[in-house]
Structures are given as structure tokens and as C-alpha cells.
Image (cartoon, rainbow, N blue to C red; front, side, top):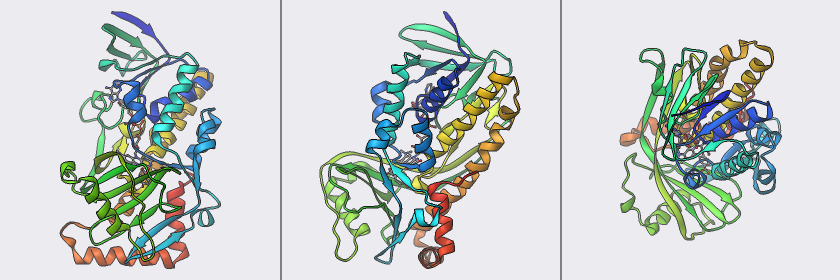
Length: 392
Ligand code: RFL
Ligand code: PHB
């Protein structure tokens, strides 16, 4: 058994764990990051693409935004489509000039990993049998196997950044957390295609066949989604069927969607989930380990980064002054933002997806809400400030 010591043990090398590690490095705090997948896997797991400006600014301030500033694409609006027509929501005009940046989560993760390894700091991939112990003591431990050796890492604090299916949240004794959740009766079938995006801004489309979204990753890469069943069988979706359905759902007069080779496809289920509090003893949960949103509001990655910003500030303050006030307030401070994003994501999801059983009352409500958004500045401003991210 190898015995090791660090200040903050970070479980998970997704956006939350890697950003926390970077912020603590800048604060002069020692960390070890443990990841159960390979570097190759985490660098190529296609997920989010929309960064709130505040998220992008934080990455730049943390010294990992050089490529993001060069390659990220700034958007000042999105489009809502329904009844066969598109309507622009001018985000920046409605939300104090703030904007969003299109830059793939894969790229954020690559930049953070490169910075971590560039600093020569510990980031272990392919660790096995991770277990979290002694959380109520002042010396919590993480036990794991790596390259055939058994390790015991003693820490001051453990950061649970290991996503929804991780081990940290389940390590908290039963009965101490309250959880809140909602499952949705739909999923998203997503593709990455090697073709220039056919529109300048994201298009969120309400359609009788179901929701569709046109997004992008770069001037040469389109990212497109279709509402499907949560357990949709991809074998039933050859590329030409996907394109035909996208053409139908995103189609408007005088416009066609350019098609190209499909580089990747997958199905994602959708759920809302929150645990309270996001802390037990010396374990602090951040990102998807503590909360999940359906992707319709583009909030998941942004929430993960917002959590670790607060956690890093609290930890740096605690190490410098011994004052644990911000650590004690961590969960409540995060949850304020988390619940705003939960509501927004649920609301966007409910407004845009074809309701189960095609309930005609639901459909009328959706269309009324969509018409209200594109005719009322107040309604559009509410969407805009949530979409670009509220200062909370
Ligand atoms: P992650 O990214 O899941 O990272 C957790 C890491 O922990 C590792 N892990 C373990 N490591 C060690 N030991 C264990 N026992 C472990 N168990 C797990 C995992 O391998 C992984 O590397 O969580 P994190 O860091 O909290 O980041 C959250 C985001 O990944 C997530 O919220 C977003 O991707 C959600 N999301 C979107 N968010 C946005 O802000 N904007 C978007 O446009 C957006 N689009 C999306 C999305 C998520 C999607 N999917 C596939 C769920 C689109 C999609 C399709
Ligand atoms: C994406 O580009 O992957 C994306 C964009 C907007 C969303 C969700 C995902 O709401």
C-alpha cells in the first residue's frame, strides 16, 4: 500500500475537477486529480458546446483560455423556430451586452489537461476501485488502484467532481441527502457532422415531429440534435434517415440544411436532478455529481464551472485565514444558482419538446409561450438573461 498526502483530493477529470485543480494551483494549494477513464476517452467525449461568457472569462483568467479566445465563436443571439418560421432572440441586446461562446467541452478538457500536465502536477488516468473514507474526520482518505499498486491518499478535503455516476455522492451515508428529480419521456439523438453550419446562430426548433436543434463546433463542424425516445435504438437511424428528419424539423422556406459525413452519433437521456446539501463532512460535491439538467438550456457545463469557482474561493480563503465561513456557505451559495438553472432548463425543455401523447392542451400552451417570447421584449429578456447566465 502506497501512503500519500495532498491538500485537496479531486475525484474526476471532467470540466469540474480539472477547473478546480487549475484554480487551486493558482491559489497555491496542492491537489491530486484521479480519473477512472483514459486521457483519450475524456478528451473525446462529445458533450456541451455553449459557454456562458462568464465561464469563458473564468477560463481565460485562469490562464487556460488562449485557444478558446482564438477558436471560440462568439454568438450574440439564438433563433427559436415554430409554425415553420424562425424568430431571433437578440441575447446581447436583451442581457446587458453579454454573449455566449461556442467552444466544445472536449476542447475545454484538452486545454485543462495540457495545462495540468504542463505544470507537472499529478493527474492520474485509469484509476480503479476508488473509495472515499473517513469523511467526518479532518483527514479524509481516498483509496484506489493505479498501475497495479494500491494507494491511500490522505487529504484535508475531498472534491467529488466525478459526475452523475460517480462514487462520491453514494459515499455519503443514507438519509443525509435530500434528492429531487424528474425524468423526461424523451431523449436526444445527436450527431457531429463534417459540414459547415447552415446557419449563423443556434436554432431551437419546435416541430410536430418533435424538437430539433442546430448547433456547431467550428466553421467546419455542425452539431445537430433530434428529439427521440430515451431508449432509442441507433440501429434504426441510418444517416440518411437522420438527415431527412433534420431537414423536415429544421426546414423553413428558402433554406436547406447542408449535409456531410457523420463523424459521431449517440443518444442521451434527459433528467433533472439535485441533491441537497452538496456537502458532507470534508466531502464537497461539484458539477454533475450534485446536479443534472436536461441539455435544452445549455447549462450543465456552466453550472459545473460556477460550482468550482465558489469552491476554489472558499478553499483558498480557508487555507489563508483559517476562516471556514465560505466553505460552510458553499452548498447554499451553489444551490441558489443551481435551482435557477434547473427551472430554466425544465422550462425550455417543456416548451420545445413534443409532449407525450400529443396532449393538445400542452401543445397550445407551448405555442402560446413561444409566441409570447417573440412578441414581448420582457419575455424575451427573461429567456436571454437566463441563457447567457445570471449573476447570482
Ligand atoms: P463529467 O464531465 O461527467 O466529469 C466527471 C468525471 O469523473 C469521472 N469519474 C470518475 N473518476 C474517478 N473515479 C470514479 N469512480 C469516477 N466516476 C466517474 C468521469 O469519467 C468523468 O471524467 O462531470 P462535470 O465535470 O461535473 O461536468 C459536467 C458536464 O460534463 C455536463 O454538465 C455537460 O456536458 C452537460 N451538457 C451541456 N452543458 C452545457 O453547459 N452546455 C451545453 O451545451 C451542454 N450540452 C451536455 C450537452 C451534456 C450532454 N450529454 C451527453 C449528457 C449536451 C449533451 C448531449
Ligand atoms: C451543443 O452544441 O452541443 C448544444 C448546444 C445547445 C444546447 C445543448 C447542446 O442547448
